[in-house]
Length: 238
Image (cartoon, rainbow, N blue to C red; front, side):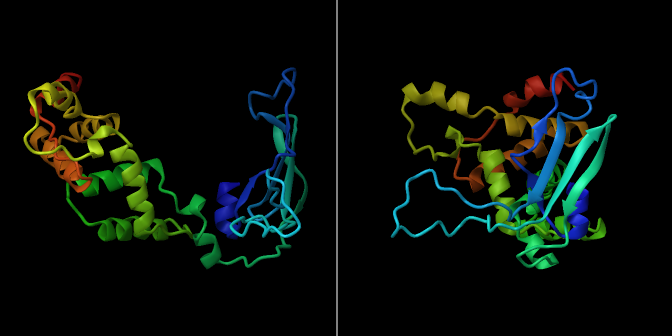
């Protein structure tokens, strides 16, 4: 469905009317549904969980506007076959510009995330340059949706900052009773460890990796630098 959606510039999501396959179904290991229904991203109607009075203004941010487009498939003898569909009727614009605005199609893949980390950490490129390089690869692959700087910043902030204490700035003149806390916080978080291991496998020098991680930490307001001791366990496992 994802490949078809990119080719047709239409985004389909799984409908709640889909029927899961019974445990006795011999083909359940191939596909978890016996009947699956995909509807347009704009299909259905928004239903508020709160009681709305006659004078209450309806929600304006919902994408559900009752689009009738759908595709219904059924698992028959281990193969998915189209039972019915309505893909030519939409009550909203269907074009490349509209399709490229969906967050689901702008989102970075795992490969793009690792590529972006390498460009930002090791090569110290700007967000604009990295986004242009990612979008160039997408154009070469024939993809319709392009990511923007905000998408990259949000992804990096989510994975690298990771909502931990490393984002807080440590004041000058730290008291001795906080030294143990600083020692723990100077260690690598899970995202930094994954990045460091990936770079080590590529033959990047440990000092360069440490410098890249510390530069990225400073960008997120963290003044606690990692040390060479943080990489001892990683290098021993390579």
